[in-house]
Length: 258
Image (cartoon, rainbow, N blue to C red; front, side, top):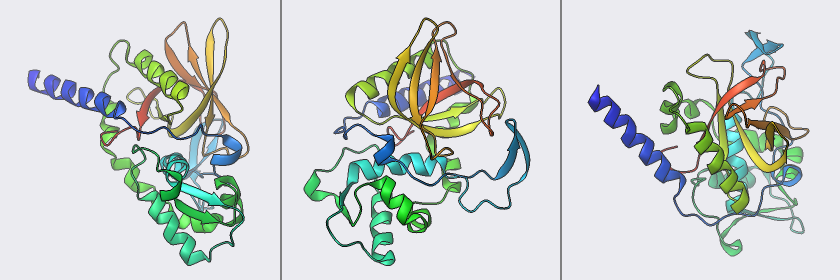
């Protein structure tokens, strides 16, 4: 038991160090410019947040981690040139794969070294006009289930862990660094297992702090993630795939162990 506890502590420390790896900050992410115009679909149908039958109509499903990661990669490693002629599908596919192959926790490339995407002004426009090329080349969804940082969600949360995550999130937003948030209700249940990308700290009242987030399941507008001051926990509102309530938040893609 002591050996297990020591191993867990070591991994927690390593993951914390990974969060703090130095990296050049990219310009602040904007929903209307830096996110995808198409949505992530779910493998199952839902009603009032409850899982139902298999979603046989889904064409692009299980990619929430891929899409949040890709937003960061395009912001750090790509440059759009709307004045240049657009690429054919094969050439564009190769450039998308090159962007998606770069580790998202690494520092942003200088403008002259970025992979150029001509013919469009931003990722939002590209994903609206060439969705299939992106979907076929951003990466598969199933490998994200085997990410190194996934092991953290099965352990009980130690006191102050979520408060520390909230402090890391606030610092990242204040410094213009991306912070991909893994939302889960594990180990309590499996009501949600999802990734969103916080964009800005939006508001605060006597009870809650709200964060604007890009949720790949909702392409039309940003969503809100809340921090409860009283309970010292995060919570996410209900939608068609989640019944709403408390969620545990873990940072992902902040380092190789996340």
